[in-house]
Image (cartoon, rainbow, N blue to C red; front, top):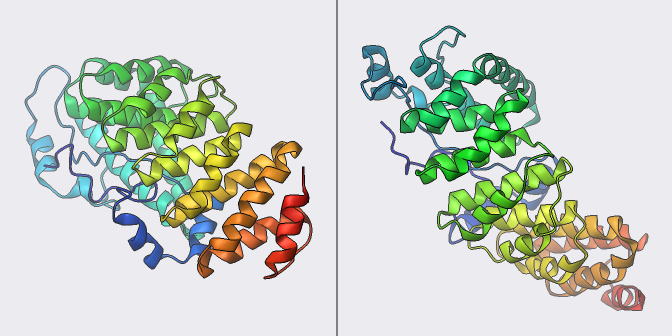
Amino acid sequence: MLRSSDHSDVPRADSTSSGNAGPRDSAARPLAVLAARLGRGLLMPTVLATAVVGCSSTGDQYSEHERDLANSDLGRIPNAEVIISSDQPIGQFLAAIDVRIQLWMTLKASGKAKDDRRRESLEAEIQRFVSVRADELVFELESGPLRNRWIAAAGLGFARDEEVLGPLLAALGDSNRDVVGQALFGLGIRADADTPLDPLLEELRSAFEGYVRVNAAYAIYRVARAGGRDADVGPALRRALLDSEAPVRVQAARTLGVIVDSDAVDDLGGLLSDPVDMVFLSALDALSALAVGDISLEGPVARELVTALDEAPTTRREFLRREAAKLARNDYGGDMKYWRRWAFGLP
């Protein structure tokens, strides 16, 4: 049985931590591939691999079927064939939902266009079954055993029922931090503009657990992208650009671009030298969004791009030059004298 801390085979937004995952990511994927993933929105939160959630909501005893499932590898094999039906016992149903969410995450994070149709079909299946039994999942989230709460929190993110927003927000107060992380995942998947951002921002600011901050940042990004706004979002996200978790920095940067935070130019410019390539690309994307969203920021953004272009390693210069050329509506190639003249001549 997997424990709540077994996250090694779970897709992450970019890397498990900023310490050593970034260089491995850079070595495995050229910048162009990462840029393509970024453009297609392939930035994932953390979802716990729970393997089983066999308990019924009335007690902690597993049925024989559920115990077998607990001791199998089904929960950790993302393409396992696990039967799902709307009239299964709740433990079996949740186990089947868990496997499907793991597979959906794997397909979403693959970055391969050929996986899109399968992922979309799987997402529709999850939505259909979760929506039919949303009331039961809410009950499990609020009063079920721990593993049931884990999966119910993630699964309810796929529900079409507007009534699940309240229970997901309430789950942020769960005594178990893994359930809180799963609820943040669910809120991010829902991407509801009506989601109040205050509790999400509080988790981003104060959560000790890195994966909880990752999911908080992901949820904030998704809600902001759907149109949700809060006066405290900008300051909290600018602080999050210094987070030790690279995925938090990725999501924070992208959200600052979405909300066109005019105070974020300097901070985002600093991330252009971040050692993690996906963080660099996210900051570059966000700076470009700021210049497009607020014409008064063209000059400050241009100066950040050109300063970085002058100092960047060869692998990143093409990306910086390309964005600078879009902004300048001209490409000065490798001649830094002309780039500086353009950037520092802007207001």
